[in-house]
Length: 113
Length: 111
Image (cartoon, rainbow over all chains, first blue to last red; front, side, top):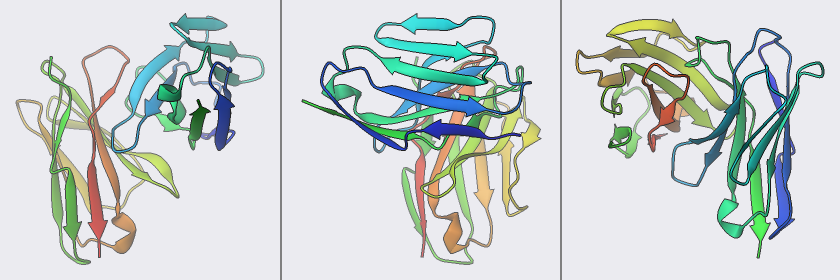
């Protein structure tokens, strides 16, 4: 019940396309859902996060869609660029225990020029 | 503000040895969490410290331990190293809000 399932494992998209990464969780007690971006040799960097009281959140070219009834959330990257090529992780936690994030397995995204 | 710093960045140890990794959080942040990242298991929570106290611990054996100092800097120690301990060890700091900020990690290789 603590798992967060992330798909796909890898994704190749042409520049300008809209990659979509999906995550599903089981524990209905989770109430904080962040997305992290990780480049090789670097630690994960927080991209955007959502709470279950909203269905969508946008920050720049990144959008999270949240479906509480389906226990799913997804990341969309608009107008994707080669510089967006990285590994993306979804995560979940029960606040205030944000320090104990449960992580998805990661999606390796490649944006082709 | 300077980000989270971790030292050393790379480390090679032999089975049976012990290792200590260091993390300096963002100035003003009092919470420090540690994670292990491996290709097979992904990111796994090790433990979290706040004001020198361990608040929570993940499912790792007792060979993994940590501590936090009064200036919020934290160390983690792994004793009796095993080959399976080879991983990227990440430290994250938090300043009271929900966001966690990660350091670049320490790449530990056990031979």
